[in-house]
Length: 296
Image (tube, rainbow, N blue to C red):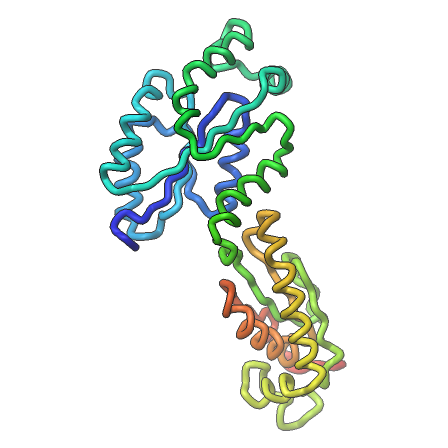
């Protein structure tokens, strides 16, 4: 990690404009998030992140008018960040007066600047106080007509896709045996029971799909090669769309009858292909079941 290679995003804006929802989105995108941190503590917090030696390198801080008097120290703290070699971006969320009033009434919350007065007066005062920060913002998003899902897509587009971070999705390739049930957490399932079964060869029956002999037997089959090529093409087509939808991980299930031979070999080959462009984890759920062997 470079000396101060920590990415800070300051999430701010009007009360009721969606900052809490935005913070949840950043958490899904792998950011370490802190809500309502007093601005005076930002430089110290940055130093603590730096001392983590890379374990915390993407941070989103929600800073808003709830900080009361502390809020006025924000610009000074942001200047300190720059002086100490850190970089930051400001995301400012806003919405129309009508939408903000509706959201406050639906949630039965008090506006922080109008705890006992009219909502509209609190909103106007907050706009006035936040104007200078809005002028310094790198991104301004009006959430008036956005659903939470649409806001998430907007944030993913601006903070992942536009910045070329498409490879951050984690792929888990999970081999399994259908006789033991389909894993509950899989997103996509591919059935490879149509391939020739090594179980019916005496020399391969008690070996596993990770053994060279079984792996070669399965992978060298022409039908297996076509299948692997088509699955690889399908996954490379789908993955960018899963990323665009904000999915942080994708679990790909490869199943045969017992989960020791064919599914294991196919999973290993897919991992070899996919890890060229993505972060890949491979797991063989049923490879060490006591009853080795397929029966189909």
